[in-house]
Image 1 (spheres, rainbow, N blue to C red):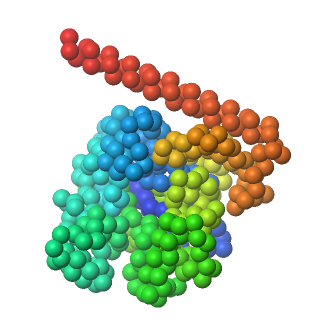
Image 2 (image 1 turned 180 degrees about the horizontal axis):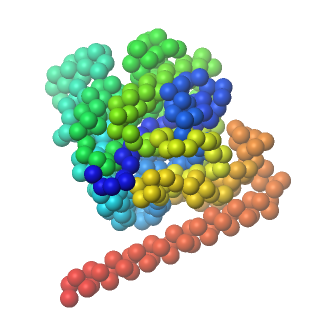
Image 3 (image 1 turned 135 degrees about the vertical axis):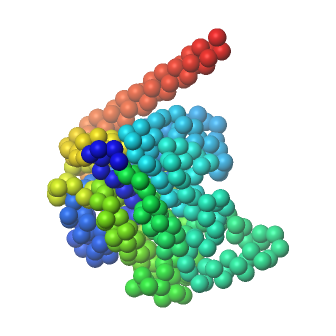
Length: 435
């Protein structure tokens, strides 16, 4: 073991809203295990994702850098989007590579289809396990331990062809209990010091929760909620209040399942005495602003996420803004010194972007400014007085809007300069290599 290096665990949960965790929102009782660990450690009540979806968030907080837009792909081009992520991950030395250079044994378990070998997320990991339908690492039985899922999978797989497109859809039904034995085995065998990343999909739609963690939804209500969710996602029809309630209940049951996972992984890693960083890649809309899930919008329900650091000799609630882009620096600090100063990572201005970079936002503790590049529209919200972002006050506070718009413009100028320098450097190295 490398002397004085703490074991590190990073748990990422897809689509977990901050306000559904009790340590952020005292009115929520869904996450007792999460809340206890947050209370024992350093918790961040204003952690902000760099984007509202996995492709616009995880590549950014793994590298600390936003992705550039080359115009050669479209949102409908799945492979093009994967290739763009892969290019970004290869361009920068990212989290796992940095920790590997620090002497860490690195291992990952990811259930998210965007964070795979195809998108170069395996770089820097000594062991990399994809929990997906076509994974070379696991069988379909590890997607879920649900009897219903296994029966459906066996039945549909026995049909000629792929009539429902099941082979590409079933990975979204991943549930952590199906693969937790693999995670436990890895934890027991990893040489020290180690960095373990586990990315679970459970609170991502469809909200199919194992029976033992459901408190609000009977089976028929859960599946009905899924169907109405998809209807709300694909039509402009206003869903009835009862459908919204069922969707919300199904999502809250998923949060309960996530909390059980946190309890289990804490117990599984306790003997290895790690520092654990827990967060979500982005939030989830449940009807707010007419949206369900995580569309290309930059409202609080999609950007504000839970984050805590457990296992240090410190406990406190930090209310300053922490951008997820600081996660690599935070973990490298922990690797190098075994501690970190939250004030070195909190920021007064936090920028977020959609995957296509069309919409950008800058957030302060009081204000949120959103700019749509294509339409030229701008919005300003006063978060303290209007946390639901229902009233645009751009006209009332024009000077604030102009200042924040200028900050976004300066950020984009800096990004463009960095991209130009990187391209020139790559050309130079290619030229030198040919000499």
